[in-house]
Image 1 (cartoon, rainbow, N blue to C red):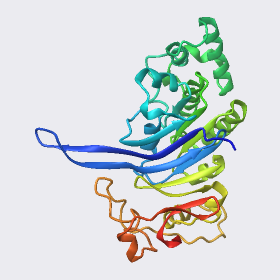
Image 2 (image 1 turned 30 degrees about the horizontal axis):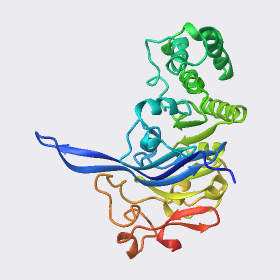
Image 3 (image 1 turned 45 degrees about the horizontal axis):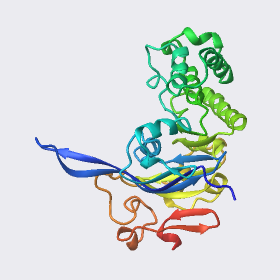
Image 4 (image 1 turned 180 degrees about the vertical axis):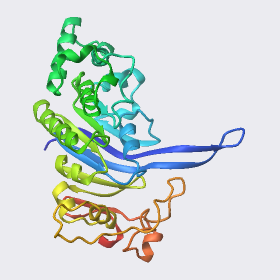
Amino acid sequence: MTEALLDVQDLKKYFPIRRGVLQRVVGQVRAVDGITFSVMPGETLGVVGESGCGKSTMARTILRLLEPTSGKVEFEGKNVVGLSKNEMRAMRREMQIVFQDPYASLNPRYTIGKTLLEPMEIHHLHTASARKQRVADLLDRVGLDPDYTNRFAHEFSGGQRQRIGIARALTVNPKLLILDEPVAALDVSVQSQVLNLLKDLQDDLDLTYIFVAHDLSVVRYISDRVLVLYLGHMAELADADEVFADPLHPYTRALLSAVPVTDPDQKRERIILKGDLPSPANPPAGCPFHTRCPAAMEICSKQVPAWQEAKPGHLVACHLYQ
C-alpha cells in the first residue's frame, strides 16, 4: 500500500488577542482547530469553504510560514513541526506554495530572470550556466517566452504573473505544491488556461497538489478528493465526484446549491443559510455550524459531532449520521 506523502494530524493555529498597555492575552482566534487529513503521491486534494474558514491559514501553517499552535505535519514520514531552521530550509525544496495574488508575491524590483534564479541560488542548485538554462526552460514550460527574463512583474498581465509564480515554485523540483486560490484573481478564460497548465505539469512532473479555492466548479475540475472546512473545522471529506453527487453535510449542500447552473431549464433548490459566519474568536458550543444549519437538532448545540465514515471513503462531522 502506498504511503501518504503528507499526513496532517490534529493541526491547530490560534492567534492571540492582546489588549491594554501591557498587551495581555485576553482571548484567541481559532483559525484552524484540529484538522486531520492525508494526501497521497500524485493526488490533488481540493480544500473549499467560505472566506474566513481557515483555508489559507491551514496552507501556510502546513509550510510553517505560520508556526502551528499544536499538531503534527509529516512529510514523507518526517515531522515538519519539529525541524530546526536549517532543516526547514532544506525541506522547503520539497514543498512550495503558489499565492493568490501573483503581483503581491513577486518582488517588483527583481526581473523575472532574477526572481527564478533566486531559489536555485539559495538552495545551491546547478551551476550558473545551468541555472540560466533552467530559467529559460521553466518559462517555456509554463507558456511564456524565455526572452522575458529581463522584464519586471508590472510588465505582465495577471495570468502571465501567475504563470511566473508557478515557474518560481517549480525551480527547486518540489514534490508538493500548495496552490492558495491560484486562479481567483484571474478572468474566467485565463483561469481555464492556468488550470490546464497545472494538470499538465502534474502529469509531466509527478506533482502532488493541495488546491485551496472557493469556486466549487474549479475544485470539481481539478481535484481527486475534496475537503470542506467550516470555521476552522473539517465538515466533510470524500472523492470529488462523491461530494458533488451526494453531499452529506448540510453546509456542503448549501455551498453546492449556490453553484450557478448552465442549463436555464434545470431547477435547483437554493439553500439560504441564516445569520453570519460566527467569529473564530468566540465559536459556538457544540457543532460549529449549528447556529446556521437548517437541520440543527438539540444535540448539535451541546456536543461536537464525531469525525466518522458515514459511507465507504466518505467522512463527515455531523450528528445526522451518528
